[in-house]
Amino acid sequence: GEDVEQSLFLSVREGDSSVINCTYTDSSSTYLYWYKQEPGAGLQLLTYIFSNMDMKQDQRLTVLLNKKDKHLSLRIADTQTGDSAIYFCADLSNTGKLIFGQGTTLQVKP
Amino acid sequence: DTEVTQTPKHLVMGMTNKKSLKCEQHMGHRAMYWYKQKAKKPPELMFVYSYEKLSINESVPSRFSPECPNSSLLNLHLHALQPEDSALYLCASSQDSFLFNQPQHFGDGTRLSIL
Image 1 (cartoon, rainbow over the protein chains, first blue to last red):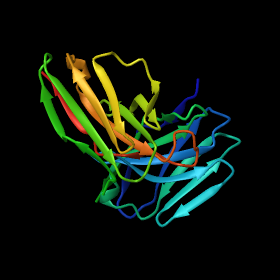
Image 2: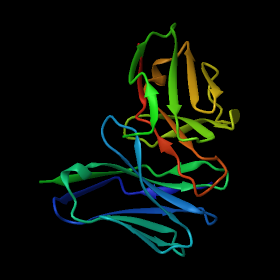
Image 3: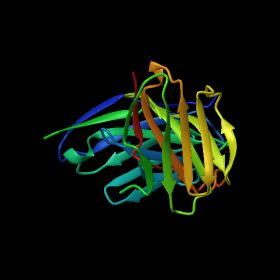
Image 4: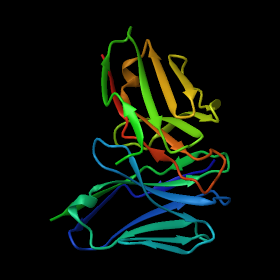
């Protein structure tokens, strides 16, 4: 079946760039999403990318998509302590269901 | 600020109680979802309503009963829950469950504890 995988943990220093990686197996993926979840909160939609795009930039966020390798990454420039959270990559399957990765915990050290 | 509102934020109930979780959105979305999320895990889909009709039930036990009274409201009725049902319950909505360019927007969830 469809699967999405992410590394579980990333630690960076404040001001550095963070890169969170994700791989997926569904070759018919149309849209791929990044969600952020802060402690005690729901999921906040950060950004999404259509499968025929290579890159999307939105302020400090850059999403890169390598469709051949089924690899997605989220780069956060100038990472701040407020960026500490769990980041979920998600693939919208052709059944309309979101397939989530396990989530990457981003720790930002001052 | 989230545009999907869930109440209550926290709920503690005994295994014999009956309670309901509520979700409301005013974005004109026609698809609404219930998810269950355990700590440090991704959300797991439970139910999908599309145009006020139940379109997906992910083999959820009957002690969870969803209801969609109108296009803005989604309820989850709870009865005779088990301790393992303690979790964060998230509601989400999207413009249409079959429009692939319309992302799901989540509420902040109800944290449910079963004693």
